[in-house]
Image (cartoon, rainbow, N blue to C red; front, side):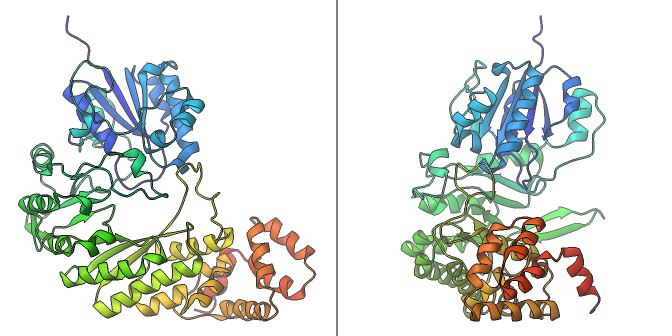
Length: 499
């Protein structure tokens, strides 16, 4: 009797993410190789309870601060397998960092770490899932669901980058560093200096078509003693500096666009300085952007030397992760951002800074952790500035000074500003902003700016601000606090009246 094909459901919880779940994509390849039916869903889909019998459900996890939505997703899909723990598999970053907590909340024993050993799910084979190519067709709902399950393709409720235009994978695994803020030493504890990406990319090209770009998620690619071989592989695959990609556009005409290589997790500035020869090799590939971390102001000299070496080898487009709310101060953040502006001007570069708020590896939400040198309202101020800038810091001096101030003192002043006014600043200060600054300067002259910040840190709602206004005895504090009651709608309307 012919063995029945198994029905496999792959689930990514409904948190927001731009990158596709590579682990689930490789598991899809694995099960399709075994002849099973595979279906992907994003979030909780209650219609799945009435569709088909699922032999196994896999649920991926990402960051620990997605805790609530991830746990709720796991507990919902448990009901589809009659709470049978052998039919539901949970893995990924959060599951690997907090397996005991996940087990306590769900009753599921997570699969931790990499799927880099044969037959992790006891299917009676020797396939190593981590070595498989991702299934680029996993998210092709029209093709997949209609063919396998007889369903009409539903409207997409997610959108992933990379799938359409990029090869993505790894040429190394792990990291030689043991940074306190990073989970890589626990997720990928053993450093692998070389993974041959050529057959990997070739297979993707043969099965899913040629892609324009190459994105590698290596956590410390420069640490590899085989970095020259990795660069050779990248160039052999057609991603040397200046390479272009030809394709047929919608008008059935041949078009061309530049290819790029993205070491998405960034490169190590310390190794760049120690090994200039590796920077020279970087200059031979179509890297855009070169991502370099700048985690602490104490690394200023090393970071500066690394950026200047990049410029020496004609790497002009850079992206910069800047960690804050860790072992730093707001003033330190401003200095690091300003250094990039100075380097852009001096070296004729385009460095886009991306401030990233530190969240502990065991945090179950985004906002609860505040480091000793920061406060709730100061962090919120940075986030509001970044909301306006869509996450990245502009490369030119004028825009930077307007957004972050001309010095550390101005930056700290801006972070005290009411949210609604902060969100609706323009190229030049307008009357409401000037009014707030006048009141704030009066407070600073009286030494009461700390009193204001204490109130701002304690008030999370309009009602709490109203109560603070009633309780305060200072006329200056009452006057400025009233400006914090303005809503974004009110400020937007006031702004529109002057345009």
